[in-house]
Amino acid sequence: MNALPRRTVPFTMVAVASLALPGAASAQTSSPTLRVALIEMPYSGERNVSEDSPVPAYLVQGGLEDTLRSRGVALGPTRVVALTPDDEKEYGAWHRMGLANGHLADMVAANRRSGLLTVGLLANCTSVLGVLGGLQHSDPDGRPLRVGLVYIDAHGDFNVPETTLSGMLGGMPVAVAAGLALKNLRTESGLDPPVADANIVEVAVRDLDPLEKQLLARSRLRNLTVEDLRHPDAAVRAEMERLSNTVDVIYVHADMDVLDPAEVPGHPLHVPGGPTSRELAAALAEMFSFPKVAALGIASTPAGEHDPGGVSRRAAYHLIQGALDGVRARTPSERSDAGEPSS
Image: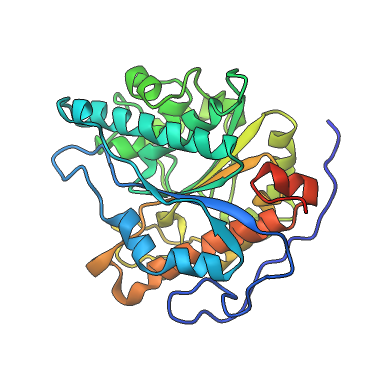
């Protein structure tokens, strides 16, 4: 494999005012406009709780759209995933999640064909299936693309129904994406064929169930540590180069529970030892400097009363800014692949 050219990735490290993205006070008017579309995905797929999450709307309500525009971003219409009237007649939390993911996949595919970089504001990690499905079928010629997944989470989410201790669907999406379980959910989400496990990189995972560890040990998944994130020009770059030489398109997904608990104090599943949002943002800037990265997902942000002082929302904004800084570090021709005009 030929190594990709080294490039310097700037990450804006200035103070944050209110809920603005880092550096929002000095919009980058000198660079070409980056074209981005937000998608709100409120469906969680979890049983015995409301299937609609307030998380995506909460992120938008903090002024995300205006702040992105102030940074020189051209926003496509923000879309909200919703079930159709016929879908609403269906029952079964996992089945309805698959139907919602199918609509998410259609939106993601349409964005990519239109030259828009998707930023998914996701209720939880089960939506990874819909984003992957959309990217897989975003080729104008209709051929399924080889998809790579960078999965940033404190948990492996590599359980199947036979191994899970919690029974949470949100603990299974990586295994489902890899074709190990719940085929109906995967195919309803638009992901067919499954993602090759060698094309999945898990990042900063530090809380695994016992049988989940066994599944991972038998797989070809790659792993990056929290310490790797803190030095993204080494191991992170090596994995991104490997993926870029193997797949057609890459999705980067971040669950907010990956962060230092001080930035997600209201998250019920936070795990000690995580990176700060600025450390992860710098790693995202490195990842998004690679032109095959086509979408960012931010999942499970604590919202409302679970986010005292808006600390988690600010952290989510840091991650989005890091990704956009990475896209801006691409060459003009590379930027056009992600929705940024070359001139």
